[in-house]
Structures are given as C-alpha cells and as structure tokens.
Length: 124
Length: 108
Image (cartoon, rainbow over all chains, first blue to last red; front, top):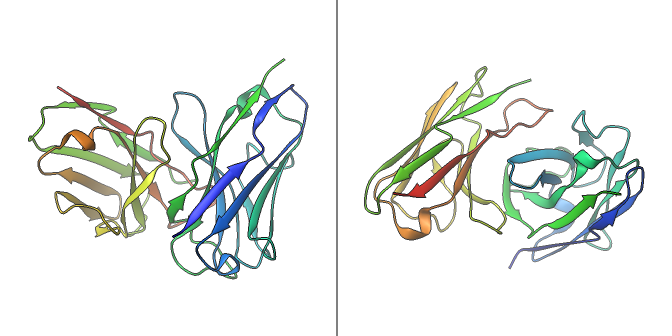
C-alpha cells in the first residue's frame, strides 16, 4: 500500500526556517517524481515544487523560488522541503504527492497519491 | 502560463440529481487534464487523468470529457459521499503547474 507521511510543520515567525519531510512507502521511491502542493486555509490548491525520481531535475513556483528548496534522499525514501525566509503568505497545509507513472529523469506532475498534509503557520 | 478556470464556483444539487462541472484552460492542454476530489480535512483524491480515464476505484457514475481547452466532469446521480470540492489541473505545459479554483458541490 502506497503511503506518504508528512512531518515537520508547526508555528514559525516571519523570516524563520522550517524543514518538512515526507516519508514514502509501498512503492519504489527512486522511480517516481514527487512534488509539494500547498493549500492556504479555506483556499484552493497551489503547486509549490517538484523533483524527478533521481533528484536531477527540480522545479519551483515563482512565489517560492530562492526561498524554498526541494530535495530527496532515495536511500531513506524521503522527500524534503527546506523553507527559509518564511512569510505569512506561506501559511498553508503542505501536501506531498507522487507522480502516477514512473518518472526517473523528469516530472509529469499527475498525482495519484497524496499524503495527509502538515500545517505550516507563519506568524509572530 | 496556462490559467485554469472552473465554473461554477459552487453548485447546489439534491441527492440523486446530475451535476455538471466545467473547467476551461487559457490555451490548449490537449488531453493532459486531471480531476481531483477533496473532502473537508482530507487530501485530494485523483478521479480522472488524461481528461477521461477514470482512476482506480472511481465509481462509474463519474465521467470526464473534453480536450483542448474545454473539459467537463459529470456526476450522473449524486450520492451523499460525493459532496466535496472538485479541482481540475493541467499537466501539459508547466511550470507553473496550475490548478483550477475549484467547484464546491453542496447538498441542496
């Protein structure tokens, strides 16, 4: 059974940092691209970042470029999101999501499994 | 950047009735269009990909259609568990990867 379990969320002050993790199981993690998608309270879905299966290709939304960094450790079956210089508008539930098809070198960004999300609150 | 527009923003439907949700892309996305369902407090769930291919476990009362810039999600006979927010998402040309703003299907 495919499982994605996010952790690392919490309350952080503006300008602060946080690192989110997404532990994957039930599939060959290194064969699939994975992504972060966030949802501000009461709002819609917003794509944040994606990374290919081998970690060689990364993509970011303009709103987070230069502040958030996606990475993965395929030996630990874990996806990360390093969040620096956080702003109030980064407040959201952050979901990790897996590509539906094998994507070792690229990203399709069609998501067949999602984690339950971790809440990040940026506030003083 | 491809902008995805969903209509209506909300829809009130009685159980057993038909619901039709629309999604429009600002330029052609071919058939590279997905639909997701999200219930309160839950993660999104993939319903359709490639515009009309039902994902695993999705009931036949759900159908997806369209190509290019116009897409439709139809629920033929709404069940209580179908009341949720539905999002479309294109994966044809990105970044940025854009979702539609969502359609909330409510009980009438």
